[in-house]
Image 1 (cartoon, rainbow, N blue to C red):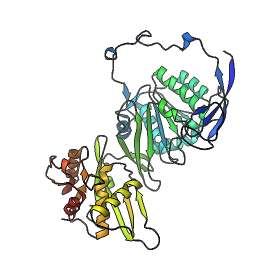
Image 2: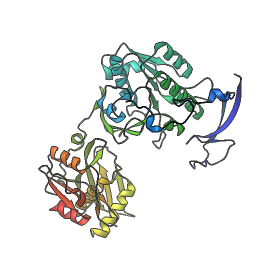
Image 3: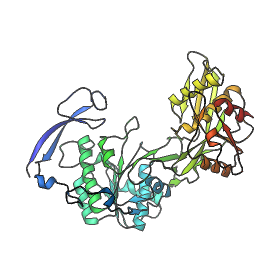
Image 4: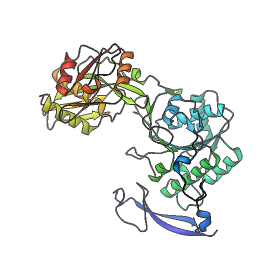
Length: 456
């Protein structure tokens, strides 16, 4: 078919298209992000060729009569990765994994690719950023013995990559990274929104047609969000994010979207010289202090299918000059402000002239409200200079009225506290009726009752 040129204007932040240039994107609100792109399109196909056919022969069918089957999965060889994916890699799925530079994306993918090649067959690793020698050096370091079925292909042209896939017929395809890929059919530079969208469409078609799972590595922006058009996240089946502090060895893998499993699971790894090491006992690795020191309280959240315990530390010191500082690492700054307001109103302490610093030890970031009570107790303990004489776990959401709201999966948190050897658990009243299992379960209706139970 003959090709015709088309000019579109796209927002580099969200990927929204416009027929002409304008200063502000009306979709995401960003300024000066709309860029002109020239693309080549095929002429409109006939109506018959664009018709989508299904099992109903073009007619609606009863949803209850549609047959269902379990999705076939393959193991990645890494238990924590399989956990986040919902039990393994679904055949024909497209998985997008992102993270900051140097966080370990390529390392964990290389380990998984080598394991899959050993067990299932040919794996094609497409590298658009590194040479064969660079990938080989990493594989020697993290994989040890490299499988003969693991193929490396340094290429950035998506048409050449798909042609090699037709010849080699891999059972697993890795593209590292999507920002380096380009299609000869699109008249724009690699990494542009048009190129990313076109290459992703071709990879999706390949994955669904050949029932081959595809892993795509993606870059992130300065703010930590996924680079490229937002539509890519809607197109793929699973979006994974690899996060961690650069000065710590702990890495957390989260799923922000998963069509074949839950998005509540997390995977824990430690970055070592030998690659990514799984951390099945995340709670035990995060807690070094028993929580009996001034300003230190242990809390817990339920992530997916397991409770995770960690230590929350607070430091309250008198402000020297100017306004008092409020610093939060690992929890929301807005949540800290809310808890401080409740403590001043309901616990009778004035923090107007005091700097308050709160840190979640170990590099964990939690957005769960279940840690509110532990944060409040740690701040109160540091302010008063007093600590609990017992090993206590505090879990509960603090409301604006000072009352404690119940949390989910409290019984499983109690069981984990017993395994870790804690003496007592402070919970909201509604959760206090759970099975104790040999540990003292203390119910508190408000923040004042929780403080009395903690310092008892």
